[in-house]
Length: 273
Image 1 (tube, rainbow, N blue to C red):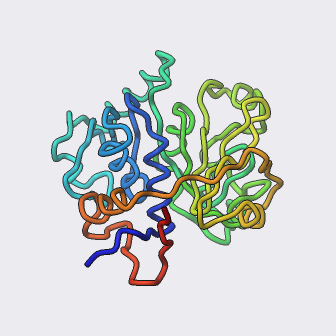
Image 2: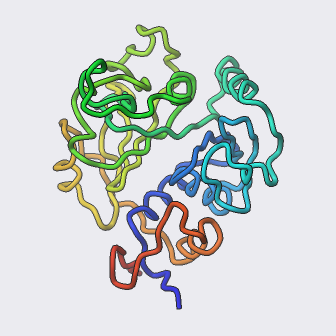
């Protein structure tokens, strides 16, 4: 018999993503945890949200978990099937009309205190230690959309200065986006990691700790961050309910495409009353 009174770090992260999405928002999702979180939002937290993908599919509600943004399973029950150029045009139209209903998820290998993200390389660009796939659509999305950034919380990833700026955050602080020729009324809203949630101060635009999970702590997050971070606003976030965990495992991702169900007594955190 399945046990829904425990949850994994990945499930906590997916639930946290879902809780950030609001009714009426248009959500740019990829695959992986953002898709699980967005599907959860559409089922539980924000049934009025609309999921779109950069392959051009709008108002998606897949009945099986797609493996990529080009997966035909995204087409099942979607509102319309546009080309990629129509998707880009839609995104630009939202920005031109000063709409704040568009939210997007991006990730990367490194992030700095102002939410600038590197998904290009580690080390010198011309002679890197490691080279990644690069921007894809992330640069355009980070330029014209409010974003939620997905990261694993490690000191080598949260650093004072990233090796390469792939996707712009708040640049170097207040007014930084405007000085770079980017829209100043868009930018990163938060960072969701496997340890907690970081947000950005409205005045300084610098990252601060907003919340930690029942299984993490302020001390662990500080130790895992490679720059000074304000923790004075941090609160413990609510654990997922057994009903939500059951929904993830039986309906949203029953094939464990992106979230593996833990073995008994391993890799799981007990849900307490």
